[in-house]
Image 1 (cartoon, rainbow, N blue to C red):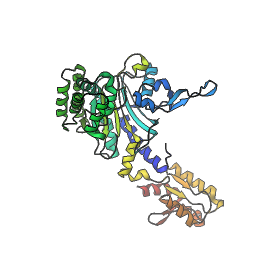
Image 2: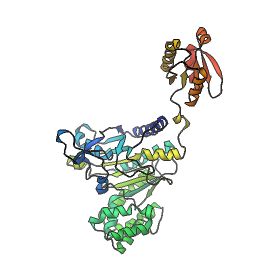
Image 3: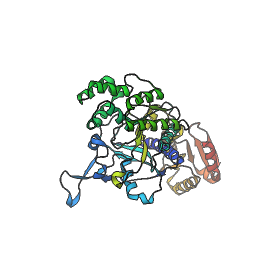
Image 4: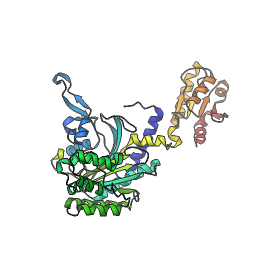
Length: 436
């Protein structure tokens, strides 16, 4: 959990602004939920590993019992969304599309780009099973990353029912699926041999492990989506749910060709994603120089039903703000204006008797939509100039006896050293022109 200094906050606001602008361009509406949820709301939604990472809040007050928890900080934004939809279904449109940018908390081990408190930038669509939903998710995420300057990202796509079909076809018992998926999700980190070793430890037969790794492309890697589909079809030919899942993947790939995501989507049969509530297509967005992903999500048609008592189709994708910021900082991707100073001009204080006039000038400039800082006390002008320069303020205003008598303001450009006498009623126009 971290503090953010002004430059950090400006960068965060810039990225969040781009995300919100793109999401609203796709018709998504903003939503916010509390930081705290009932612990029953969160438990059992993220799998065994996820439950261990909940920040639990012990009972409070007179009814508090030592060691018992009834609340927890939210782990993600998806389960709270499901709760809101279940509680407010009658007030929401048939197809509810929302975006949400808020912090979440996980009792995780910090590492590069991974923190215990971090922001998620979610976009979700509720109410439709059409593959148009997945396609628009991928297009919206693509537009966000493109607007931010990313060019080398890849969208990895898989399907939980196809993955389950491969596990079944490989002879993995249903009760072993979750443990095997955890091992499979490490394929890009420990390689086929490492995964095969973990599968053996979990009791998967060598022949089953070979079939599973073959289906995932670990033994005969090919980047071509049609080759991957053909290989999966061989493994799933007798698995009806798996065959249906491949049809959905084909639809997504086809529809994406009509969007900004064209050419960026790559099937990855090893992609598992750890959250247990996914029921359909799953996706991650990665860049070469980051361990982990910039974004992830998928379809979760059963999650809302846990609260509502009736299944409601849903799909979403979450952009990881912290990881995006890490990569953008390392690559120096922020526009120069994002790191700009807190003020366009600083007003010097010539003497204590002139404070009222200085504040009046500041008010005039602020009415002109300028960002104005006022040096708070009378001091040597050289020291005030030096202070403004140290903060990166581009202009300094001086109103001495001569300027006051003429009705002028002396404006000094700290970058060039040039000083210009500007009539008081023209200072706003002068500074706007100088900024441009």
